[in-house]
Length: 212
Image (cartoon, rainbow, N blue to C red):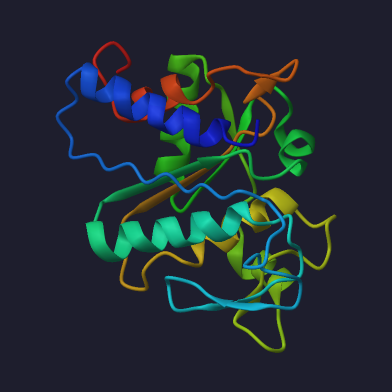
């Protein structure tokens, strides 16, 4: 159930190829098994991310943002795109913010935010903006021993936005392109089954044939 973000992305990627999209598109699947084992990380561990930043683990259940942080770092360091889209069932708080039918989106420009909302309306994969305020929200991750913690101090302070900003922090320092985060914990499942959310949204964001 927690892999429906990756499923939506791979479905969108496959469909874009089949529809003959002309853009250069890369897909990075950021997948982690949340399981106990001798090599599993633990609370109070300090991890060095692919971005070079360090993270103090204070919540072992906030593992998705760690692999997504590495994913966007890999993309912006090695692939040099002009747009990065990440999508995941990242936070239960998304349902509080935007409900069960609309994903929450976080974008680093107003233009991209508007494009995402419009793409949702065209595709039927609805989304609605989350608060974008990294200068106000990122202090929630303050750590005394690392660059950041992996979970917020105050869960009542725009938690879904904070989780997105954690991922954003791992974009390459010299990256100047667009970044769109899609938290689709609500619309991604219904009655314990995947809905297929995200495939249409990805195609609409790419202006794929039939979705422009």
